[in-house]
Length: 361
Ligand SMILES: Cc1cc2nc3c(=O)[nH]c(=O)nc-3n(C[C@H](O)[C@H](O)[C@H](O)COP(=O)(O)OP(=O)(O)OC[C@H]3O[C@@H](n4cnc5c(N)ncnc54)[C@H](O)[C@@H]3O)c2cc1C
Image (tube, rainbow, N blue to C red):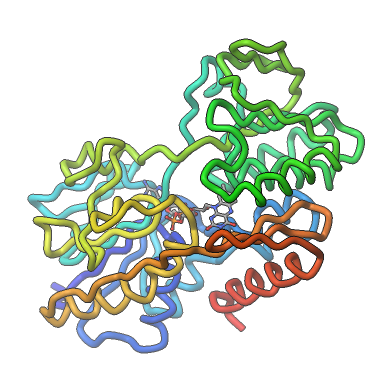
């Protein structure tokens, strides 16, 4: 029988890849580690629109999770957790296999809510991203595309489609919330100008009510043709969190305190989109998962040593860089807005540096 403590990392998301890098650099004596994740390759979402636009090969935006786990001395199990038995401290995978943990960390992201009639059948959800890339390849010859969701992902993907398909009809359906809600007016204006320049039709104020093969129906505006439909709406919670009895917010994301620890469960931590940060509501954005990575790594070490966690201090003003698919980008932080080719080069440098951290070289 292995007497070492067992750390189970559930999901190889943006925070956990940093935990693995940290553990590879400085192993913890007496700790056994297992990573269970649904996919072998963890996509870096910041570069995904660039993959669709043709700026990057898919492999450039994918982190090889088993290889990273191996460098940290961890076992990798490709499976989707369907239940966490909190009393027995067991994670159950889809194939029925059970993994017992002493310490559990959850970074399983969020899933798009396919909430219009027919969407589950006809739309391609933006997550899981590996499935998106496969299904997207299957619709590469379409003449009309629609992207549902007016947030940063929907905006970038609509323009990435334009970069890839010069002649296709492209519609961005931004729904009741409209384009890039919450961003400064200057950023929204520039984003609208980019859509107009690239002849991407924008629909705002009309929710999508129904989806069928080849068409998108709205409340209060004409039907739009869409041979291929990409679904990039707000993030829904993975069902396994609430169904396992973890303390969750009203949407089903697991509560975490300042130290990314789950209240009432000293042995469970969570980060990224799956977590609902109690000290202050955080946007579901990869950059918070990335920033949480080093704090999570430190706190998992502290938990092994029986020490209390240190707090995560989220940035007040996050930098958002939006590619417009044409070698330019729009950047915004703390009310300031910039745009240009240099902004894209800046974003490209940040994204490539992120990926270099988790590659073998
Ligand atoms: C197209 C697109 C562009 C985006 N661009 C940006 C951007 O520029 N900047 C930004 O800040 N944010 C961006 N986002 C948002 C960003 O993708 C998410 O906020 C980010 O991925 C959250 O990271 P995470 O670690 O929480 O989860 P994820 O990156 O989603 O990782 C979750 C991991 O868990 C695994 N998993 C899922 N369910 C299970 C399960 N049940 N059991 C086991 N494993 C599981 C998955 O395989 C994956 O490895 C973008 C999103 C999209 C879709």
